[in-house]
Length: 131
Image 1 (tube, rainbow, N blue to C red):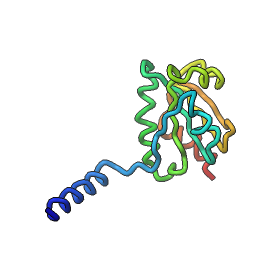
Image 2 (cartoon, rainbow, N blue to C red):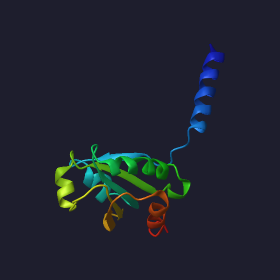
Image 3 (cartoon, helix red, strand yellow):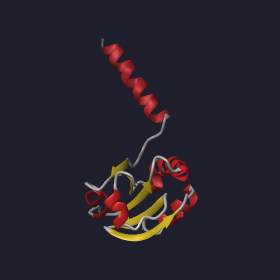
């Protein structure tokens, strides 16, 4: 029995390292928790306003996954906001097109832009605030 448990734990450990270590979880926010997840957070928060039906948003998603696994970005909290499920927050943030990305530092909006952003450009923008 102990041998079986050891083998299972060993397999889990190998899988963990083979498929990557995520340094940051990607959170999801809506009208009910946006303030808690974004505006009341200390440090850097990258917010992605997106929708399931949006092609460029689907292209942006794997970039955010890569970013969440990048050790140099481990202090960046990533929050996704589905505009169809967070209509009030999206309206108040002035979201007119998606994807819209927003960098928030200690509750203050530092930058906001629309359109797909590749990993290199995203890391460059975020690095200004990670000092």
